[in-house]
Length: 110
Image (cartoon, rainbow, N blue to C red; front, top):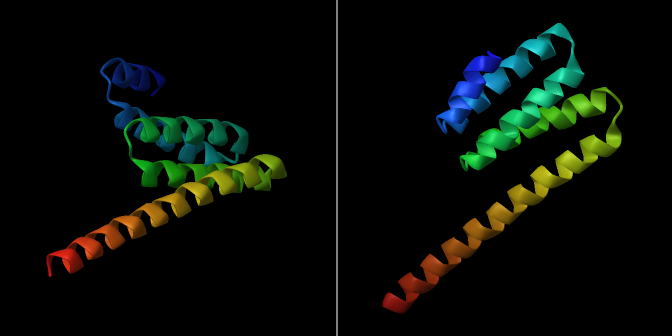
């Protein structure tokens, strides 16, 4: 799978590389190797972010946080949860601002 990931990266297909990393992470997770699983979830999140697939990136990062907490690496878990929360809140605010702008436009046109 590592060679497939390299080939996808060379072709600029980061979302496919991310999917492969996520698949590896899930396999390692099932085998109980949380440390390696975290590494692959982080790689997947990075590639998803590069493709602006933020929901998939956040999903992978939440796995990182959960596994870090299981391994008693609470500092890392808290940091990842904070980052995902801040990103999510910022998007909610932006979505609300956009809705308000549209509402203002509709009222203005009325």
